[in-house]
Length: 162
Image (cartoon, rainbow, N blue to C red; front, side, top):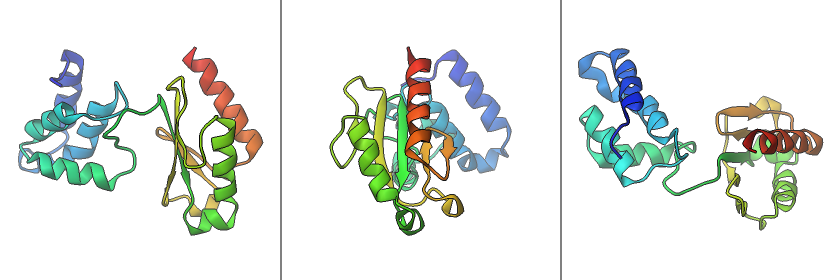
């Protein structure tokens, strides 16, 4: 990967927030930074984060595997993660997920749209159980979802992308 000059400046700002002997604490912000441009992390990105923090790449891989916001494969510009855990499922999230996939022209298990604008996937819990059903698009939360609401959001994102 190699950090761009701007990314290196941003990384330096991140690292200054943590004591030198606690660089590991910066792993999440560093991963967000590495993923910011293309919305996923390849092996070079992972190695750059590990090198910057002085940790093993296996440790970075384990963190990426735990958090649903980090991707190790190319995805659309907008990552749509629909929670289908029990509270959301009880409020219709599974049916909502299927309808969303149909609207986006995807199969019943999600995937990425042909224009590479959207990736839709099911996830387990995004910590908004009291506002089920819910989903997250990149870092933005949408709660108490309706079909109409998602149509508006998709239209807005399509307009912003063009």
